Length: 189
Image (cartoon, rainbow, N blue to C red; front, side, top):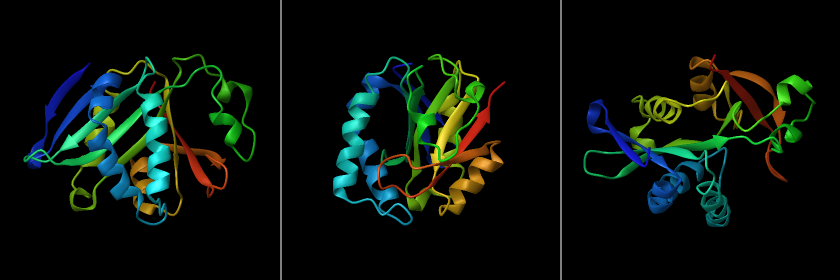
């Protein structure tokens, strides 16, 4: 997959990137992330962004990492999406406030793709860029389902995920001190 461009209407192109290519494009990912998540309800500051990109560097080294990067016609980064398949030892299910069944939490390294981040810069929102990023990211994926956390006070994101077929399966605090997030699941099969 290294880097495969997919041109989209409205002058925005979406490129699929593997881990090494995403690592090379870290500045573009960081720019979109920092701008999008500085807004409420996330209110992330430079320290939060730095922590996110320490994780990003580690995540890009995972064999199943994949990403999508949207750029405007003039090359400006406008949106990002990335994630990887969850391993058997994932702690994702442990973050839920209410336990789920053993069958729900069973992971084998292929069953569930964890969508870590999906963000679009404000001037390009409501133009279908997020959906194109999402679809590009999942194109050709070998997983039964996709799992993500979303802040419930981000109504546009929650509405988009619901429209794309996700359902809420619980609430979680994804990290110490975090607000409660909706845990949403999309069945792919």
